[in-house]
Amino acid sequence: MAITKSAKKALRQNARRKVRNIKRKDKMKSVIKEVKILIEQKKFDEAKKLLPKVYQTLDKTAKVGAIKKNTASRRKSRLTKSLNKAQKI
Image 1: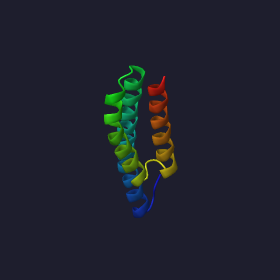
Image 2: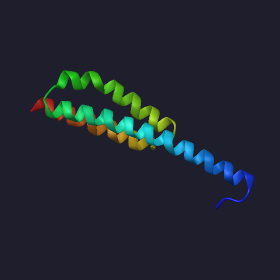
Image 3: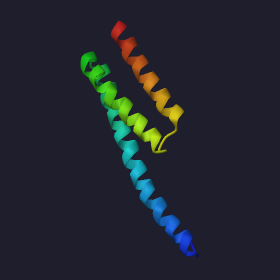
């Protein structure tokens, strides 16, 4: 257990940040899931309209440090690729 005053404060900060990061990640995952479901249902126009929101959420999550920049980039790329591939079929 933390002994010094600064260590106790660091624990409090970590707990607050953890909650914030979990919220951000949950929102990110839910938006991505929405797009994937739309792709499966072959609603490509709706999925395309939702893509900017997905990009924004991923970028914000990466900016604040909940995920890494390359992870956000990879997820955007794969999602767009799957949408384009599904449209061609």
